[in-house]
Image (cartoon, rainbow, N blue to C red; front, side, top):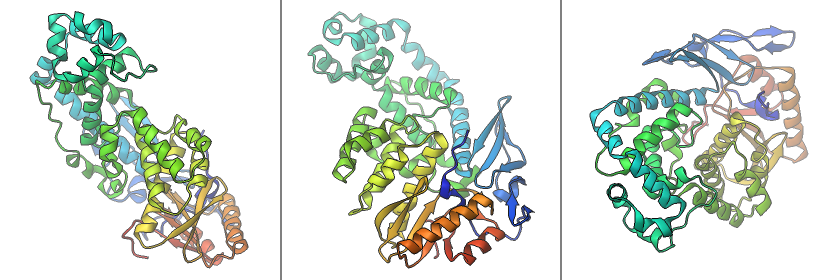
Length: 420
């Protein structure tokens, strides 16, 4: 069940005149279904191997889309997460095309079972077995050169918690090849999509052998499907060389050090990094976003983000961390984080209390009213000059009017170059 963030009801866009009015029960609006082209104008509903149903469910905060693909239906919550899912479908299609090619088949044949078995022996016990590799395995492992030599000398740093197969892939360079491949396709190597994971594993293994070049093309060929919501969503948008080059455990160790140096207690950063809903790339993006705000201790944000109870929560905190850096890019200095319900607001240099929130389309409900009144009271208690909500979402005319009456300002369609 989705965890509803208390202040999530604040994130609303100024709404297009094309939108139909939500149903209103008394003083409040009622969640309902919407035509997809009203919730996301210009969205392509049919693509290669997939179809988006023309009606989207809105729960008052997020949109839930239904995508039919390969004979199955998948429900995806969040406009941005729909964009990610469609990118994954496009990546699957491209990798399937690659795997059917002659070049790939020849490369996969070279990675025969005997050679892989030999590589596994190196992974399990490199010092004793590297000198006893069969000739075929020597050819297979030849390109790792110094790595295998280090293994023979007992110098290879092997993760004892990794499986033999994972260590083998690391030895032959397949894990790094997988990270590069995923970045090229605009997806994450840590995706929970099992089909995409298997294809990434297979194609990266062939690539890592070095004898063949597997060209997957450019991610930019497939982003047009949802290009108007991809800014800041695509993996490539928050990817750094560090994320590609570093092994996951090394990456997380670097993030831990970075956060501790920024003032986060070790226990809090460990809880955050240990939350299974954050993969190493997303955790890195969040920490890097937070430490960019120099002189602001990120402990409050990290502590709250560590409570993420599902993938939607984790994505929420990732997007909010991006908004915080966008505030700085827009010239809005941040001096302090403030816990507000079950998310995080910030105090700006000018004394404003700002709630950056990631949402799709929010309407005016009893919960929204209670949260808005609480936020306004908090701003008054702190003597804030202004109470402001920034979002990339939409809000209904009723919600916008109620917020205005409460004295809560809104910045909509927010990014670092937004008009304010």
